[in-house]
Image 1: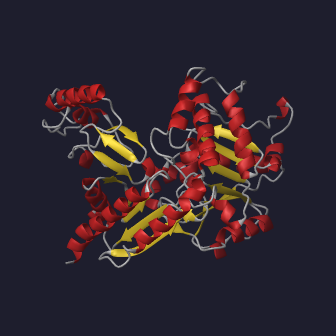
Image 2: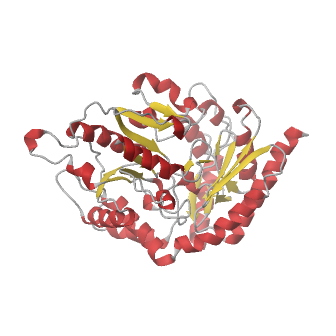
Image 3: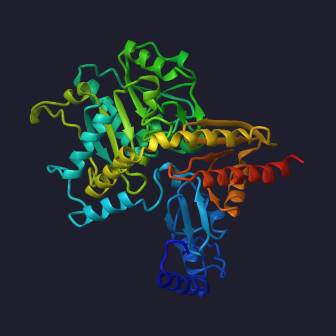
Length: 454
């Protein structure tokens, strides 16, 4: 196996042999029997785990892919099979697995300290990272949290409390867009617009004005903030906004006095071809949510950045209780911040955005070859983000999953959004690997959709 010494290879083979022969767990839980031909890890997964966004009854009918190691754009499972990481481990991994610079930064920080509280204390990497993020974004204040959902939760709560401090308590309305996804905490669900994901939780959420188009922007003085995924809606199926739409939204927010919250959890750190999507239309939001690629996909860390005006509204004496009453146990943790600093150093030293230009063109060319295939209704691409939508198929038919399963059998891992197959590899993918990924996508579309259209 690549990257392993002979001794490590022999050790792993012995362990896999033991796992494959073990049948100590006979039940998959909830009355679903586990297949006795699968290894102990697979059976334990079925018996004890509950996976996100997964129908577990179906999951427990199949042998899971259990990832054991990885390097660059390659992932390896416990059976020794290799796969191209076709979606950057759910849109997080930027520079590949086991990048030496990020690995070294985490190890070096671990030799000092892993984590200490950020409440009443600070730490070196958190300070250094904040300085870099402020310089990159032009926003002067950073509030750390854990993931994309919490970054958005922070932005929502900041916006609401900001207007209370500014003497405009009537500004409690949030405006968001249809088909939006901003995370799974309750505030983030409230501004989310994917009915399938969110309808069961609606009794817990607050009312939001939902826009299908920018022309429906409300003309009133009670809007606290408008929330948008700039340039592209991720979980909606990588749907692209019209050119100039973000710039016009900024203008309308300025006109009405509403704050603009940009959710760059997906689009940040080069995914659209520039460091941040907002740059492409010359827009600076009032609040900016970052996560996913912030640490290069290594550790959970998020940041919400904001303006001096928002920050200053929270300043006062203790007895005024203007404090932002929000925090997380692992806020600003040293390991995550060290990984994020290494991630930004890679951008600076390795010319990532410049090197990505040719790969973006090759991604576009490969996706264009999918347009005339049977079943393909639309191909979407921006930067190093690609999506192929097939149809018309009912969601219950799981055509997106069928295509991704066909890709997995051919050595590429990705995950669909309904009937949309997403292609979003790490930036480190070689041109040869990218060509292979696109060839597998085309072959799998032909195999699955072609059969349905015969």
